[in-house]
Length: 73
Image (cartoon, rainbow, N blue to C red; front, top):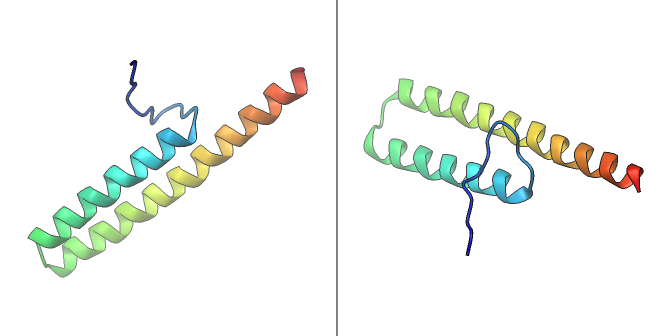
């Protein structure tokens, strides 16, 4: 069984998106459970915002690639 790591720079499937967002959520939960400062919470808000924007870009990239592939047939 050939398993590949999620690709962040060039996502090709929703597996890449879900795996990256899942790992990011776990990292955020661990950081927030260890440190309880206001500055850390602000950093995590910025981090989750960046992850959200990346997820929107990645899904758009995947859907755009699939419509281009469908148009070639």
